[in-house]
Image 1: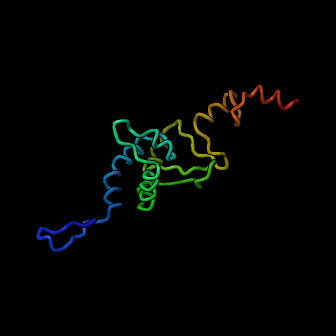
Image 2: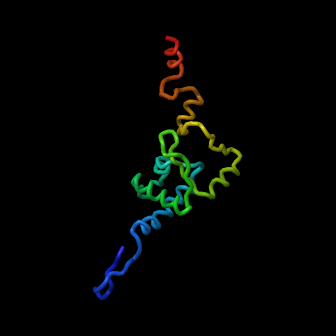
Image 3: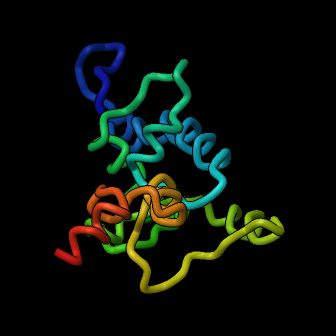
Length: 142
């Protein structure tokens, strides 16, 4: 970013637009991450975004998260693939979560399922393809 000096004869640099955008947005993103009870995907972060704040575009949120990761402000795990989405959290949150007696650590080798999918599978209401468990069992025998 540049600004014309008072005399109108020269420009003065005022920093980088992306740095300014990130510094203004970081506090909001930080609040959302501080309120998290577990590591969150970008989609989950947007779903948790307070209604009274302007929600960032998914691509903008991705840029903010990548900048936060590169500056050591945000931790990231996952490969970015369908069953191993990137998940984000603040470095200090992991110790806080581990102090909770109900904390469940990430289990390696398991597919990256949403909480809803985990509940569906645990209760046997729906299988991975969204079919009723009983229908799937009946179809296997035919």
